[in-house]
Amino acid sequence: MGDTEAAAGAAPMIVTDGLAAVVKRDCPTCVLVAPVLADLAERTGLLVLSQDDPTFPEGVEGVIDDTDLDFSWHHDLETVPTLLAFVAGEETERIVGWDRAQWEAFTGVDGLGADLPDWRPGCGSLSVDPNLTDELAVRFGGSGLRSRRIELAALEDEFEALFERGWTDGLPVVPPTEARVLRMLEGTTRDPDEIVTVVPPDLVECTVEKVAVNAVMAGCRPEYLPVVLAAVEAACTDEFNMHGLLATTYFSGPMIVVNGPIAERIGMNSGGNALGQGNRANLTIGRALQLVIRNVGGGRPGGVDRATLGHPGKLSFCFAEDEAGSPWEPLSVHRGLEPGVDAVTLFAAEGVRGVVDQLSRDADSLARSLAACLRTTAHPKLVLGFDATLVVSPEHARVFRESGWDRPRLLDELTALLTIDGQELVRGAGDIAEGLPDAFAEMNLPKFRGGGLLIVHAGGGAGLFSAIIGGWVSGQGGSEPVTREIRP
Image 1 (cartoon, rainbow, N blue to C red):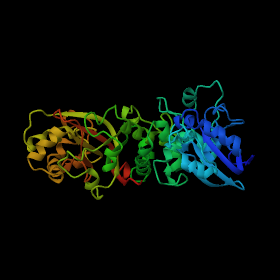
Image 2 (cartoon, one colour):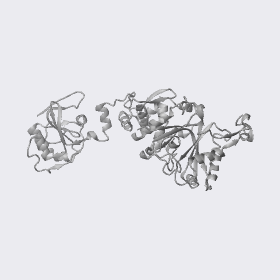
Image 3 (cartoon, one colour):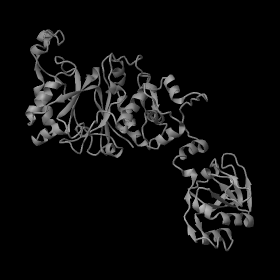
Image 4 (cartoon, rainbow, N blue to C red):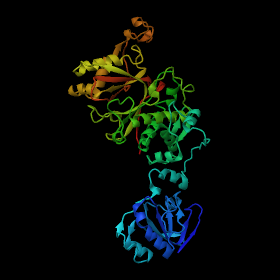
């Protein structure tokens, strides 16, 4: 009643006709029913497979070694002990756990385990252990991944190998094994072979799988992947002009602002130290984008990336907007998306500069402080050429809330305050050679073009500080901020 044969491409031992039981020593119920298994093996020819110890259960001759979990994985076992019935090599029935009445009906043998409890639940099969499932899927199911495999020598340090091959941003990265990439791909419903975009500067087609590989290297969790995908899509648009942003000698790199329920769901930081370190989602999402640009698109410092100085945010610059505490609608809504939609906004950002105003208690005074500092973006005498993002902290936002200023009102006031007499802007004015040609002397010019100043609410609840993040060259000659919806 226990005929078996090997079959290629399936479990190593297939029961053609008869009964089989799968057990493990590290299961109290399996230990409990060990005498029953020995009895059935002798009386019915029951085959017993052990997941963790081929000497268990004692008293059973010819226990089949399933410590590689091949049989268990191919037969989708979730619980041990499991009894299975086979006819002509096909499973016809199974029961899990210990239930005397069910076991007697299943095997046709009465009086099983008379001294045992009537029922006991089983334990989790090792083949569904979360620490093993990804490796088992690769080993037995085949990953289906198309990316090139890199074999490392036995004595080669995998972390050093990634440095030596130029796949890091200067910090260690997580080795992207097939199992880790498969796990990462569980974070999206998109097909791994779907082409997300063409990545500059080398204009390489980039699939969801390729983004997942770099998300693994960056240290992302699977639930971050949809945000990374949206950021990659936004960065590689003509409007954002990632190629130009790489090639410029200016400081800038991509900054990601995340809006929508997904920010809280994946644990992003929009509060204290939102623009700094310490939050895995913020740091790894921004880093994953940069690694895609580097490893897929070929955008590396010293190559196409020609920044004179750069800034630390080129490793990663990503944060969520504090929507719950904001006096205004979310940035994504201001930029045309519906409320509640998950979105990323990309901005070509230089480093963060602080604004200190601890005395202003009305919106007019605070707006003047912010305008005075915003005028210094790039240079106080250069107008219309550079965008900026103003990150308003909760304590400063409270001043605007209490004064009844919405976002359009603040933007209008800042625009008015930042409309500058051309006499102050021309070359030589103030004994400063930098500036505009003399032809602009008789004009009044705004510091920022229409739509060139973004306002975001983020930061900790204490501290009368805000931040200005200058941009790169604006418009068609440089970069436009880009907002994209995040797809699941």
